[in-house]
Image 1 (cartoon, helix red, strand yellow):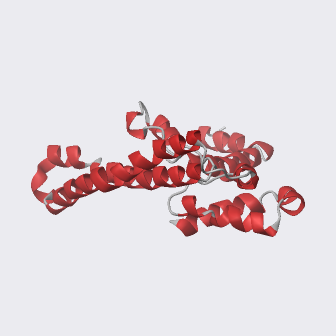
Image 2 (spheres, helix red, strand yellow):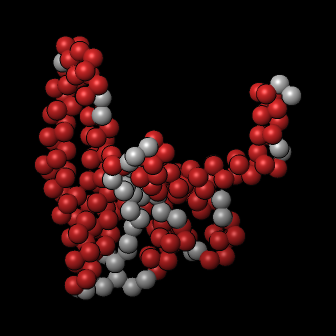
Length: 195
């Protein structure tokens, strides 16, 4: 996973050349790309916010910093050590007996792999946030309880927020600008309606 995060963050640096060449040193750019607590599971940080945080002094003895760190670290470690193995064993047993589950059983088992994936990534993200908070560098919140979503679009607003924001910033908004400039959507709508 780490190389994917590096690639997304490299695009963030390369897409903003006016910021790169004038305000960031080479060690800062490298530090941004390979900041170790977030390397394994994100979140995908924006260059401006993470480099600013990396520039600030680190004071580990601060009691609020320790409290903030443990707020993420303890749940992340518990999730990884207890919850993820339980869900994995359920996932493994349903995968092995999928043919005998029937339609209703299969429908009930359908969310299990997604729940497992979410718990796995969330555990690593919380651990990364805890370690980073210990160093005095806050990271973005990556999930907002996606399985409590009320709609499909709400689910994706809550699921892997930093990656969704990255795609919106670097793909969605530019594509929409191009579509508006070239009146692509208008042409497409006319073709569909036959006018």
